[in-house]
Length: 292
Picture (cartoon, rainbow, N blue to C red):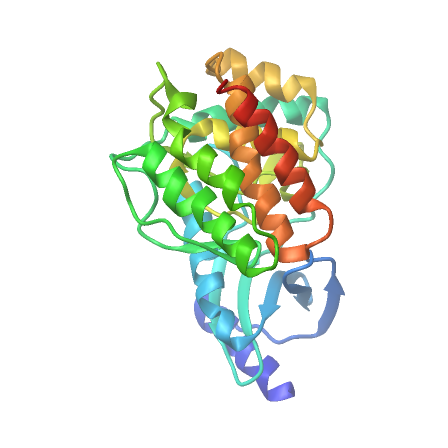
């Protein structure tokens, strides 16, 4: 195993163009998908994610997503240094940022900066790279039609996966997918640059500046990012006021946010099981009631 770490240290040295030797290696919380640690060489340190060697493509896509957000010059993200695999694991090496909780001023900044990020658009929805949401594959095949993209690459995919995982939601799911256009009458979203997995655990602060991380980047309706910030909480009223001041939301967001968060609840069922399927059914009931 030491050979693996020596190889990783050499990759860091080559990528940073400065010799790096691991003097200390400490594990930290990296979520439920990856192992995470900080590698230290005196004053220099890096944040490293690990997973099975077969998961290298997941890290390649995450690095590309971080670079895409960084190019928007909006919200700060950790800069990826290098990624690869050895005999025992795949890895992603990132700039180490000592993340802290966001205060009220930081929340206000984040709301404004997220609106800036969403102003970055492309001609089509999706992205040129498939990635993952958690550890679930996320297909980003570009499409000029947002409703079709959401139907096929997001909700339809998760509903099919739920069936494979032992919970068929097809009857309600099929009705919802068939009438998806009705949620978008009079509303045509632009393909905005999205973080894609923007819950409270993927945002923080460093030196009083907002930082977001662990993205699942693609280009889609900006409402999808805003909806997820409401799913598990963690974002203050100052955040939403600042966003609305910078770019007001359409009135239909009140209903569509449930449509967007259904994707994440289905994904949580497919990853973790438990009561998420029942929550997804309640959300579908609520959405179907809007169509009556």
